Amino acid sequence: DLGNVKAAEQAFARAETQIKDVSPVRVAWLGVQRGLLYLHTGQFERAERFYLEAVARLPSYPLALEHLAEIEALLGKREQSVAH
Image (cartoon, rainbow, N blue to C red; front, top):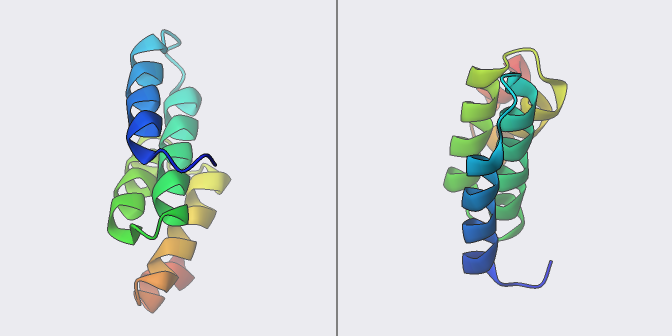
């Protein structure tokens, strides 16, 4: 929200190293948050990468699937977007 993408990237990377829980939910949630950073800064391909990782980690995670579909639509990947 403050516009400092580099600091946000560093904070996300640090946060990822702090996850000790074996549940995939926390890592998938963090991936979605990282994707949102790139969505809101217009870096759609980077956002897609984090959403895909979140879905790979937790295939039935609604938040990740919804944002993946959103970014796919923005990237013109209509069939994949509709499928998700």
